[in-house]
Length: 397
Image (tube, rainbow, N blue to C red; front, top):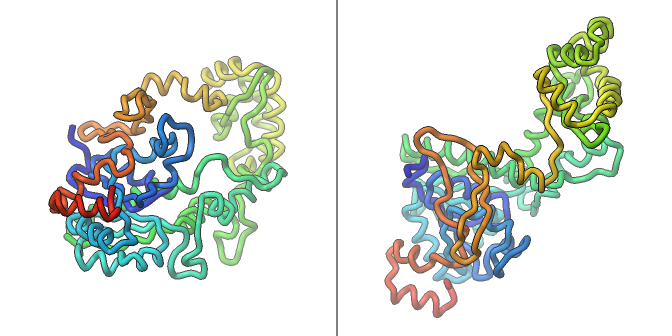
């Protein structure tokens, strides 16, 4: 099956979650992604349940569609092997700090000297032009530094809390895919490579502030930052008589239909809070408080049926277990069960997009550490004797 990035070669010098998530998407799109791991492997290999050491659940869901080679880049022979792999690569993706890449002899200058058309894409914490350059970064730190826990505190009055999913890692990973594919398009038209700096902090700051810059969008300011609708306690799944419901009564049409369901059509016309989007936003706390009180009077399924009839957006509140069993995901083929060569039956998450001609899909199961070292080095021109020596010297495995 043809895929959109067939023929693109990506060297993936990354670990943990953010950059590996990005390179997995590139691999699903058809790129030949070569994951370069240290002798001890990617630390994320040991996170989550597993059937065998180094093949944990989190690793499996961020590293399919890749081949793995183990290289000790602290040894000269490992660095030289890495540069050989890079000679005909289209993209290098890494998430080490730039200072670390320079110490390894893999700076942009060093890599572009052997391959001027390389796209050299760095996903790391902070841009190199600011005072935070070189600081370590993890998802939790970036969430905090971009005000996400504080916004939850403002909304709910609780202690600041992190979003319980790796929103920074996965958000930046998704964003990086778009940046890298745009650079590939430029490279295909001009033959020119370039260095991409893709910092977590700046990207997540843009992600958050696009909603919450508020009055500070203007000079002088027209008010404080913050989007009021997102900062009230009752912007949450609402309790019903027997569970919870996620309802989005938002536009003029939604609110008119909602009041019609209640037999209170006149309230929409006479209550000044509901006049338009601006007045609703100004009074959103009391409006959502009233909505929560009404939704508590009937059961979840009754509300879902009523909202369906009125074309008011609503969904049930899933748990992770019920999400896995969701009938829509089943009907769209979101999950599949595949046989991994060493890990047995694996529930795979599908590619959540549909293409009429070049449908992306997994090209390889998540690899064992160094599983493809021999074939990758052979493709790069190393003889079997040279590969045997690298193995003997513990440069590869």
